[in-house]
Image (cartoon, one colour):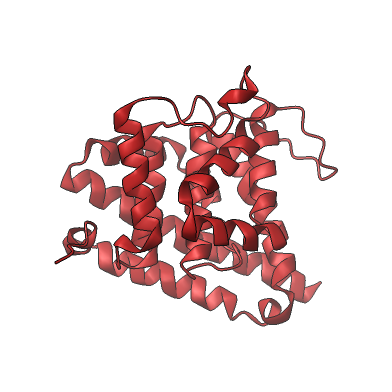
Length: 251
């Protein structure tokens, strides 16, 4: 008999309801009139906002030039990642994480850290250590079918665990947030990556860091508060996507 390792999280107060709200909000934004045919425009704008906010959380520049020339290495990496989670490249990465999650993480790290490591051999390669390998392996199992919890819960766990394990020599925050977006796409929660939860995480960055640390400690309250916080960000990120779609429709 196989036991779902994440199922107990649904019993934590407020988790199931928060996950339902996040799912419903993202489902609604995919049904927005502007996204029924023109979702690609919303997705592209969302990728820019997500990349800028993700970089800023880790101390990167918030000066975003739309010509693609980024002087700040953190911002440059975050934008490479966010653009890889848009269009045809998103389809490719979604397929990869469903069958080979370690390969998908390696790709995300290679994009995020290209300007941050001295040795190119460090790109896409988790640091040595049995604990790191075991935790990444368990995480990979979760993303390939070892759990049936609602997608917002899985997305929050992937995000929090990647922050906690600190697997790579650089850019772990950008990778963790990108992986959560990718898992959201792969599970059908946000198939086109329209949501922008990164904006909320940046606006509440102090809370983000504290709750991520508490999640890593593994206490019930730490797990619950982080998951609910991530679900709230997914819900707010859907509202951000709706504002993008509204502007596209009126323009």
